[in-house]
Image (cartoon, rainbow, N blue to C red; front, side, top):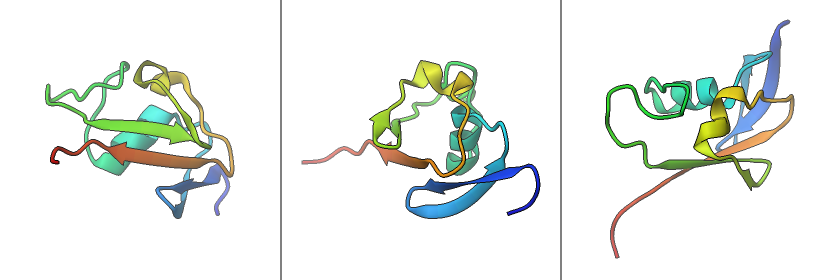
Length: 83
């Protein structure tokens, strides 16, 4: 880990993000899509994911100001269709 970074577990994999990173920034980087302040894709498409931090679901509207702490576990759950 370098200065100015923290360690988190993202979908079961240890990763490093910048100190002060928000959940929105981290999720956008993880899913490789730009997200607006409300957590919606700027491309107008559907997102289809839910996110939990340490087992607690974080509402999409709170992603922009949810600053990640060192050692948290972030799980991204993708909605799928089928039966």
